[in-house]
Length: 208
View: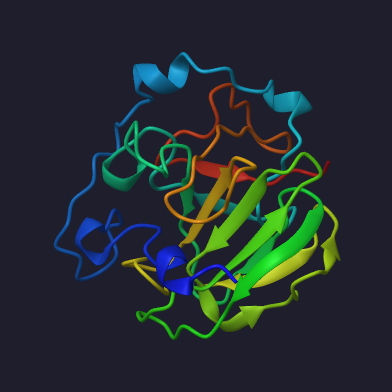
C-alpha cells in the first residue's frame, strides 16, 4: 500500500494559486515561456504522441502551470513536467493513454486532504497521475483496465490544489510515489505542441 500522506503532498499549494478566480490575492504571469531546460529535452513528436488530452473530444480547457513554469513546476522539481488544466469541480476527466489502474483515492472533500487521485500504469511501466479529483469522484477501481479516452473521474479541488483544476503528470516507471520523477509529454489531438502545452492557453481536444 502506498502511503496516502506522501501522495497528498503533490500539487499546487493554496499559497501558490495561479488563477484569477474571484477573491484570489495572487497574480500570475500570462507571458511565461518554456525554460531552456525544457526546450533542450527530447520531446516525442506531438502528432505521433501516445497521449491525448485528459478530457473529452470537443471540449476546450485552458492550461495554468505547464512544463518548467513556476514554483512546484519549476525545473528540478518532481512536477517539472506536470500540467494544470483549469477545470471546474465535477468536470469529466478521461484517460490520456490506455493502461491499468493501480491506485485510487477519492475520500478527500473539496478544499481538504487527502489529495484525490487516480493512477494508471502504462504498458511501458510509466504512470499517468490525475490529481485533485472530486470527493467520491473516481469512476474506476484498482486493477481495472482502461482504454484511451475512457471517462475515469471528475475533477475537483482536493489536497493542495488551491483552486479547482486537474493536475496531470506522467512519472517514470520506478515509482509513482512522491517525490517521483516526471517526464515530458506531448498530445496528438490538439494544436501543435512540439515542447508540450504552453501556459495560460486554450487547448481544444480534437477527434483522434
